Image (cartoon, rainbow, N blue to C red; front, side):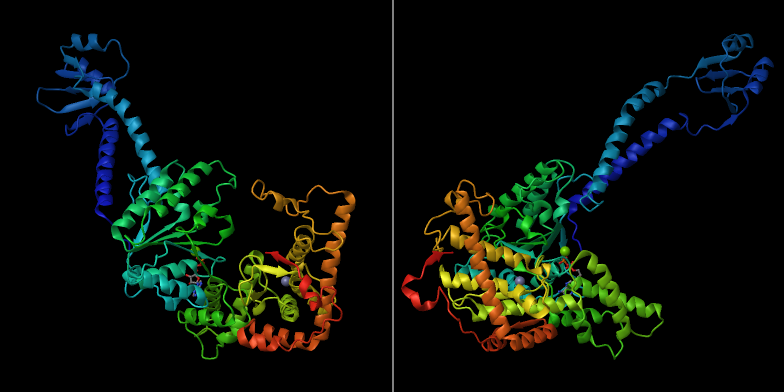
Length: 632
Ligand code: ADP
Ligand code: MG
Ligand code: ZN
């Protein structure tokens, strides 16, 4: 429920007064000047014949009307004049006492109006326009610069809590901590801990970022200012930045509190990236103001936590992500199987569900669905049940609804069909198997075929077992083989290759090229630095990837050959490992298809069964003393 402060109310009254005055002025120009006096309208011919019959005693001749009386104090008649130069003579001849309409202030009043009204109307329209620009919101038409943030105090009954959000457990854990900060800030500050100022929720659309923010508001029990990034931007320059200022002013008065800026990318776009419309300046000013405000308050004095959400973190200005600003980033990702079931459970309580419905089966069939898609699915199913005049929503309604929702989703995002899912599963297990067989590569922690973030269809997560700053040649070769493991698995299992490995190949090639051109790991080329972008990092770090020192054609050719041979031998190693462990590849892939995510000890146990004996490695571990180490 939005709280209204008093000022907008005063403004609203002022607005009404303004409107009323304008209305009166406008009307008065159109109404006849004399109110109240009853007149009888008669035709001009009647008037003339009455004059000629000498019945008329007095008349007032105006431009637009003539009023006359047949006897003093009697009824007033009115007629519209015909342009008639002889009228005065006629009146005189017939003893009518006549005069022109007394100026009665009407003339100057009229001309005054003609000067005053148009600008007034103009101003009025302009203000209405502004008010509409602000969504007719509660700021009222006079408050151009006032922030449009809504303050929420959650209703006990309807408030959103963390129980309304599922499938994003890591994000939830982080935010529970934020709530803790707000409620017990002294516990943290007494210890000297700095409470984070800015927390950025990052994730694909519909994964529950806005919902999580509302849950924080519901749980924290502090004022919650909510505004969307796009609302800062108006067509008038300077409005956005003064809104930001007002927002923080208000927030400081109400601290501890939360400011939530949804869709931060609307203002936070990187300042270097040129927008395609000219209003860039305005956005920049708004962004600068936001940066200034975030630097300007001291979190230990007034506990304000700025929460923001975006699904396009890569477009954000790096300045936003610096320490003291949005230095905490919370990933809100698409849910896995268990998460989807939990989300379905939440939304299923809103509809009448038949006993036979198996939500787990539905969750299994909806990989890649975000929370919003699942909420939509439940609603679709309920609509279908209603259309079929059913008492409650049944499994078959869900089956049909899935088809509908998937059809819609396929257009805008990646929902894998069964075949694709299978390929992705083998691909990821390929990475994992090769990765665990390679010496010195990082521990494989998790494999998943739940689409993650914006790019990957599936992913394999490797975590270093210790902090590593230097890696040797054997490890780099192992890394390259691991990167090629996905593509190699596709080759081994399906005999064909998909487009999904493009990114892997790019990374593998980059590492191989660095080995040759930056780390001097090639025997052919020797310990020379051929990599130009590394040489003057400071001056042109925007240089094209792999920009090389100017080298002779032969050297360039030699580099290319060395890179190719490194990548190709890694590829052969990966293929060998996968062929030797074909059964294990099958087993883990099938399990992954079933469960979508395998992680932790269970995964490590399975991967430890990998059998691999390096036939005859040129860079084997025999020459320990010659190991080349590099900075990574
Ligand atoms: P985002 O802001 O990430 O684009 P929203 O928070 O607006 O997504 O999600 C839209 C709706 O989808 C929510 O109101 C909720 O009904 C549903 N939803 C999304 N994610 C979840 C989730 N993790 N758990 C439960 N419901 C969710
Ligand atoms: Mg949102
Ligand atoms: Zn891959």
